[in-house]
Length: 213
Image (tube, rainbow, N blue to C red):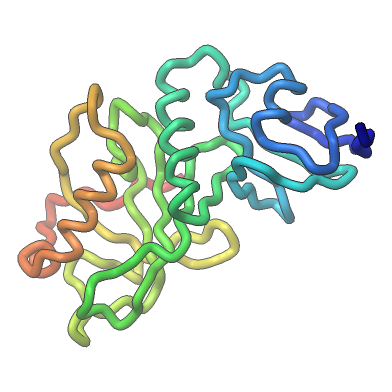
């Protein structure tokens, strides 16, 4: 049997030796991590979730979410959602696993773009829906049927993951923390983006603006 070349990588700050051609499952096992943990490869300050068979090099660094993730049932739900979501979308997360960036999320007809990146804050998940604390953010310059959306604020900007974002007010949505997850949240967002009433609803003065970090 051919011996595979071993390289040294960092997993959650711990240096381990793994085969150059490996898998996320093997990395978790060698690093002593539970298989429920999601791994994100750190590149130039950004963390991209990876899964399945991957190729690694000496010095590669992987983030394992929050330092208190292991053994936390609530965090495991988030990590499980992100792992499944990464099969559909290209996803990035911040170092503390508080922000999730979904690349190239499809928009319905009528928008001036086919896709938009979506930035979600997941603090408080699963007890709170994504975006409940700081809101939901999308690409700047979005128009629907040539007009600016009344619940879309490109004047309320946030800078994260190397780009500027505009705030989308999703209002207060029904949320059952026992059964709802990121997928049901995205389904609700899809409905809102597809329904004309949802796009034309005016935001009252009492609607909360996103919290400042």
